[in-house]
Length: 91
Image (cartoon, one colour):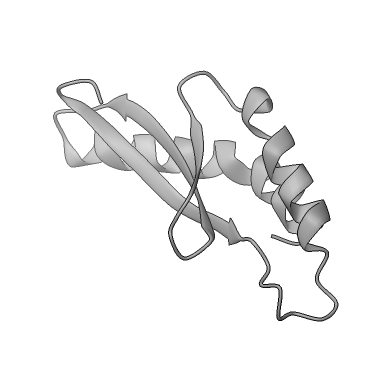
């Protein structure tokens, strides 16, 4: 992480459990593996210990609450197409 940068993180889905009968776990894993090259520069997709998916990005830390809120809104809006892809894959 860059010093003075803001780390933005959102839970984007989860890998289905093997106990879920109708879940396409293999298909979800393939879709998740294909996503990182399409993410904006500096973004990461992480798998947490409890099999949730986290989208992360860094943004400049603004000096005001308005700047902080603006970065959060930009991140949330930019996530939309990636969240759609994960949802379509069953994550």
